[in-house]
Image 1 (cartoon, rainbow, N blue to C red):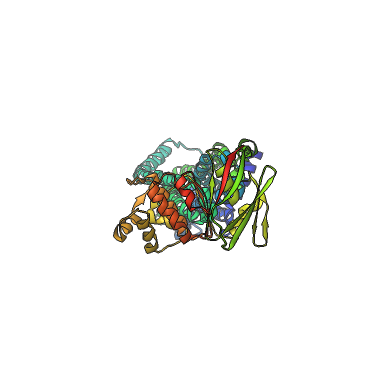
Image 2 (cartoon, rainbow, N blue to C red):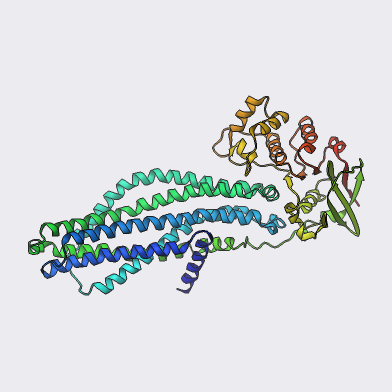
Length: 555
């Protein structure tokens, strides 16, 4: 019992994460409203039983009884629908919160090798489990009120042969479910597709997390995930609503039929005394069994989904597995290399940022100025990628400091530089997400097609404007027959970064999949769109474009 209460507290916490909505309070309100509807219907039912059983005259007009039954049934259907809507709305937003915390938590980037994003993707899928538990809890509240009503109102036990009635109810329930199964089969296929899409929309931005962090574009992917997860939750809501209709419809018709019989024979209740026992057992079964079933289902779901909800709660409180930061031991390759600065061309441009890198006992000052390309060169595994990520605040491996005008940033604060100067980042492996080429380039911005097409043509992704426009509208990723080469994906990444016109662009050997001709075209275009560039390179022909070179030399 104690564990169940703790789990319910965690469910309430998750439900109230969205401060803009009432969250769990809405679930409670409509749960109690549903319980009140149950009370209204059961009270009417007991009144009918007492009239028939005691063979006394009617006190109230039978039309009022019918009105109460109809009102209670409609109120219950309405409250059930609202419970489903609110719980699925909460579920749709959970994925957004998880993705937001994962993409914007700068601490995770320092030990990203130890963060299993496959778990994050799976956790987003746990929202369906959470929504199911949330619905069961709200329905259990209504059921509990119903049972309390029965305990208070019902004081006499009735005995009757219920076998035929129970079989009849079951047969009617099966017939209605047979009809519903056709609709559920159709929507289940849609839900399966929605689930795959949600997983894709969660996985894709995690593959390009560093670029998203630097360009502050996580809101594009958060909203994209939210829209698809909202579709999933809406379809799950429709499925739940369809599943709940048989019980509601059966009760409505049976109770309404009884009330109509009373209207017809209102003045002579003795004429229908032969059905007294049938109505008694009928109403008792219809009221008591569903209540018990709802409470049992809620308790069972909490037991079954206990682990999943605990993991979901853990990740929503920013505990992504609490990985141990082993980078200090495993990424010390740079200590075996001396870093030398080679000035190739003097540059008197405007100072953007100054870095001070501690290499052994030496302090290496690096002034990054406008209209400059700083190259980083060295053998594979010497620590180039770690250095460029440390310079932008994605790693804390190197001991370095940064100064922007009068603002000073210590090693663990360097990730804040993106709030002072507009930065761009192109990783060594470029990624695309499911959608059109235009969506992949625009992300959370809206560039003119003409500006995009200009770079598509320049970077040899299209021959002319007409072909460029068709290329922008092409769908890539999931369910697409179009396969882009590594070089094409890298060029799209460059267009995406350059159109944002960052003041400082970091490039981690992002031309590795390009031939020399296309690589030169891109490098020669960089300073048209950004003030300064810091890039890792291997190819010797790229050296001529660098004003300064940081050279990793083996001791």
